[in-house]
Amino acid sequence: MISANVIKGVHELLDERGIRPKPGETFGDTVARALDISARQSEILLERLHDGASVDEAAAAAEIDIARIPGDFLVRIATAIGTALGRVNRS
Image (cartoon, rainbow, N blue to C red; front, side, top):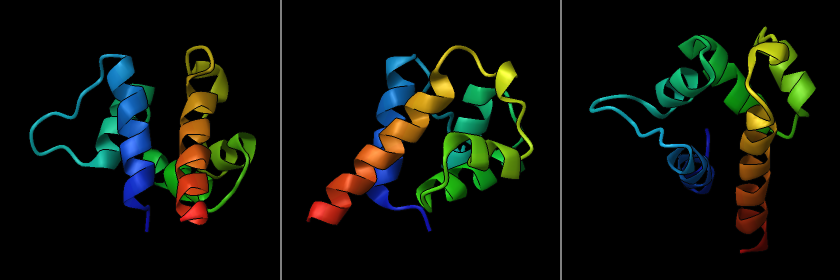
């Protein structure tokens, strides 16, 4: 299960890019829309990153072509997750 701190951290990153959840949209669906991937791919990606996989490992598990993701957006999501988990682990 993805922790609340991780969700908050990723939402902050998405918000910086002007991406906000639509009414009734799940966290995974918002990330999927932001990355232009499927909800299934988003869930796999987020779970793998949450569990400590590298960006490449998580993208491969989710069958995401990282060349399609603009700039360093995927890396920034992974960083937001790692940072949030670091805050959780220090508590």
